[in-house]
Amino acid sequence: MIDSRNIREILERVADPRGVTDPATSPVTDPVTEPAADPLHHGPAPTVPPAPDLRLVDWEPRPSVRLPRTSVPRAAVPAVDAHNHLGRWLTPDWCAPDVPALLDLLDGANVRTVVNLDGLWGDELEANLDRYDRAHPGRFLTFCQVDWTALARQGGERAVQRQLRDAAARGARGLKVWKDLGLTVTGPDGRLVMPDDPRVVEALALAGELGLPVLIHVADPKAFFDPLDRHNERFDELAAQPAWSFADRSRYPSFDLLLEAFERLLVATPGTTYVGAHVGCVAEDLDHVSRLLRAAPNLVVDLAGRLAELGRQPRRFRRFVEEFPDRVLFGTDAFPLSREQLETYFRFLETQDEHFPYAPGEPVPPQGRWAVSGADLPAHLLPALYAGNARRVLGLDED
Image 1: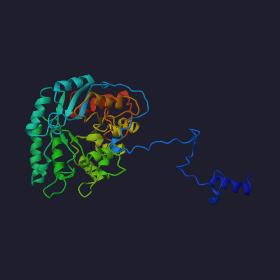
Image 2: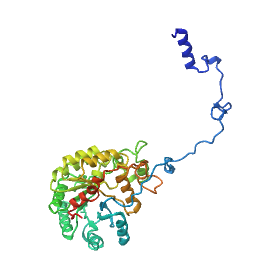
Image 3: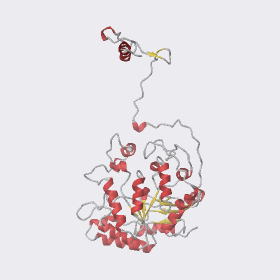
């Protein structure tokens, strides 16, 4: 039994482990001239140099963990890359300067067909169709775009619709809609044109009538709409590319407002098939994507450009594919396409490997400082994800 004297003694020892509780009688130790005892060295701690003054941009940590690596050089089944760039829209010259070399790469990786989203319109569409679709039937499918800046003029929606009809007549296999809708495209009044604007709804309903699936990219990663501060998980990327930040609410709508407009567009155009780029434009929240898919039967989603997001939630992603096995399309958004990028996608989809880089060769991961782990999808889900769903959406014959 502990009496009051025992309790007092315990409290005094907690206050000062040496048993000294009176500051007036406590010895004063100078931490500089009298180093504390170091148990490791059995005496005073040795003098050590200060930590380097390292800037975040110069920090390139190398993981110490050692784990098995599974090599997956080929997709398990012949694949369709439903989201890529081969044209001259995002680059000064052709994204694939050597088409025979690209075909060799695709053959080696078991990729049968690539969707090229860079057709644009008019002569540029013709150039893409000649270079890819007509020269290599079945291997490439080029999507057009339309010039949404025409909406800045009164009656500009009629010009958009003419472009769309012309592109379909030339042989475009679908329509690419980019994030400039809702972020930079304006109407005659100078206000932003949102994805659910009546003029957009009319144009995309026409795409459905013309038999053109619409691959649509709304907003951008959620972190791009958050303040660029110490809490932003994409700070490295945004600090290097500050123009990619849409955090200024005086200029840009919020991420949630754009996603709400996207959902209204889907519901307003039930006759149009949509491919929601980058996992339905919100890979960070697969519960949200699941709600979108339930609300809009005309929506499917691709995986393109979102390994960083999916790879840090592989078990949730696996459940997502199991719930929607006919609504998820393989795509990379990797340009110029490389063997390493394809193998990383295959490794994510087909293995249970843990903690590997989603951007091999990059000293700092470009879309967040983390590694990814494999989803290890069941084999029976792979044929639809790799090709079957895309073939249905794109109107391709089954192999």
